[in-house]
Image (cartoon, rainbow, N blue to C red; front, top):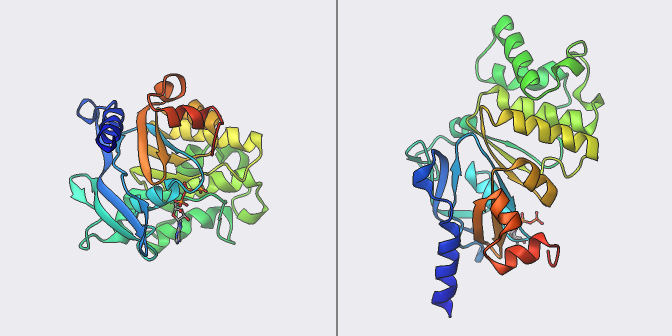
Length: 269
Ligand SMILES: Nc1ncnc2c1ncn2[C@@H]1O[C@H](COP(=O)(O)OP(=O)(O)OP(=O)(O)O)[C@@H](O)[C@H]1O
């Protein structure tokens, strides 16, 4: 019976064929422990470049743990075993410069967390920290990042105003602008719209759809409509395992695993 279940899991994960796609990031034998407790026991996924992949599943299934492992946000609180492959390099290895790696794999959190600084400084600050002091270049990156986050027109005359005076949706888009200012390859987002009203949510979704032209995006969401609206691929997590991973249309219209069907139909979670 156990073997039968394993085969089912493997067959379902395999209905994404990595050889047919350009993979930006992948995990191999990933397992994550908080102390003795195993939060991720089967978490192998391949993420296609310039696509949006959603991670869905009931509360406590391990979505955030998995996402946070991808750019080593869990290093201090969890033990992460296995490989996280990025450009041929295992970024889970001890030799990797985590700070530098996060320039390539950025993260946006659930609650907008702008610095208590001006809109301009929210973006320029990290760039200066990295040694960029040319005002003209900083201006250029601030503008490009805000344009990419679809908020330049709203804030271009208010760049010196406090970021804390922005609406929740604008703050979250500023956080996205801040994350992309250092030109990452991959953007990880942990329920970026869950604290936002429907209008702001829709603006953040539009922003992500624009951004996927240049970025590979991985997003945790509890919102099934959101996953189906914006993502190309969807992974269903349950009890620390990826039970099914496929093109989003297939997951929502023709799931192969009963639990996926139950979850997306609202029967549990
Ligand atoms: N810092 C931590 N210390 C100990 N256990 C943790 C910690 N963070 C998460 N866990 C446990 O790991 C498991 C997975 O949690 P995780 O937050 O990754 O799930 P999730 O699917 O993202 O949940 P949610 O949808 O509620 O955010 C849960 O059993 C949770 O209690």
